[in-house]
Length: 264
Image (cartoon, rainbow, N blue to C red; front, side, top):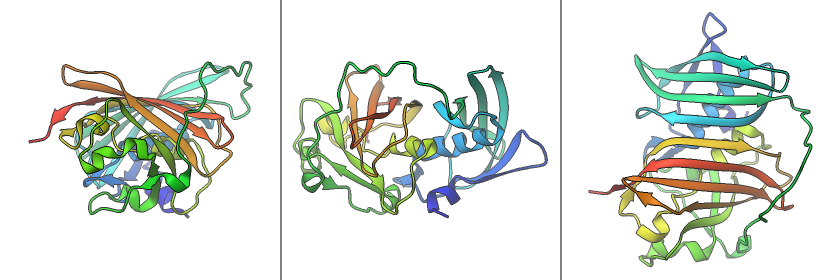
């Protein structure tokens, strides 16, 4: 079993609405569990209770700091129709609620009546020119994810800031694992915050809420990603993301709302 699957595993506790999970330290940023990993854990729990097994949308609100420790996920079915099934999940560690997620699920064979795009995949430097993010103490996410940044976005690593808060590049699992929707939730949050490109490392940007919309299954191992922040106001900022495969298909889109905190 792939490490990712081990780390999002769950089991029911006596009823069909409560599952035991374990948040591991294997997908962390500066010692804190990565938000995309936590979303994948929550989505995998909701899948256990959903009759429809294809994930369309997952939205998670990050209520309080989540620790690498055991927890319980409590599930509730919100609504169901011939097309969609909607569930809500609450992650508790001890008596404290850490996360709350909402999932929209569809049938795996759901038809695509219209496939139209008004924007193409972004231009990204070839893999051979992109810069890998090296393993770092406390950043265990990059022990398992191969993330490579377009050189146009990496000046902040050397004290050179740019005018546009944008990260683009490539990502994949270091140790091959077939893509499914829960894996794409992790991919959607595996890049450094794009605000670093214009502000450097002088900020801390804890996530408040994140939503990922899954469109298609990738046809390549390397995924082309772009994440942008356009507005930082009143202590809040957005991060809009797109994930494409090497054939030019749009795989997922994301939006993340985070706090902007100046590092002390």
